[in-house]
Image 1 (cartoon, rainbow, N blue to C red):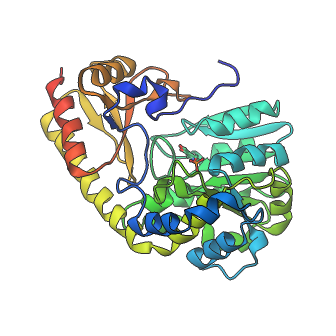
Image 2: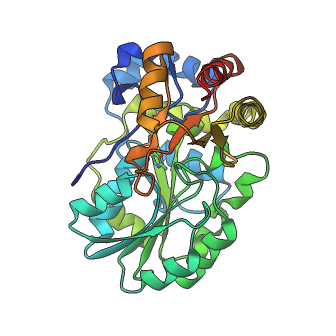
Image 3: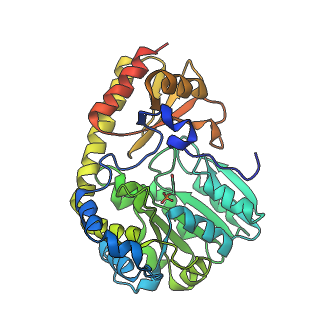
Length: 355
Ligand SMILES: Cc1ncc(COP(=O)(O)O)c(C=O)c1O
């Protein structure tokens, strides 16, 4: 279908049917209480005063959080990471782009809206095919990399590094690290953020909607050298990030405990879920992901049928992956990792329909 992109979430189906949403992969602990308290306290002024169009305080907070000793013009803030993906395409995409698949569909949509020719490079055994991407990157305006990849999970950081070292300006790389903070212990070392100064053609993308549970408030940001940043920001509308979102984001970045707690819960619960599915079912196969969601390969039922069945019988929503480029065969659903009691309900539901 031209110019369309599908997402999970309760509005992807009849929202009245959803009791438990395993299709959105956000922090299982939701928004932190510290952040909630802070925005409650100043909701009056935050609502009635124009926000800072430059997001100065937030950018300062982002640089501190990332431990980067850089000026704030290395950061652009968006109404969710999604805004930056579309601004990136407007700024840098003219003719050709390379996208490894399956992946998040907005890269494709944003590039199609710029009438770009897209080369899709399939993942190889759930990992990025660095050689093929490097070969096809020649004469391309941009490459989109997503690590952890949605929907498959953490990719090999060596392959990402290989691509970044081989692909040079004027080809620009968008590296989407929206889920990296939710990777299990040690996973954060896969981030390239600390090396950003080494690249003149790299835009790294982060999101607070997932890691910090701010999906409804919508905040994402990018880090890149100011030359690229200036071009990127020129496509931004004024006051693109509202005052409540700016304040909540700045506060969330300081509440590191919330993120650490969520990461530990995710690792424990993902292990529990995957081992349960392996031990107790025959027709569901969980795939390694290292993050707060994972794919389940279905042996005896198609993904759309399973999604609809679980939704109608139990009010449980899983992500039907049939709309992902490369997963059209209907053999996969993606589930997020939630709190223990919720996860147990999903597992029981799967077990009860094991075929
Ligand atoms: C890989 C990836 N990047 C970016 C986004 C968009 O994030 P945001 O909610 O910050 O716009 C999503 C949303 O699902 C995603 O999966």
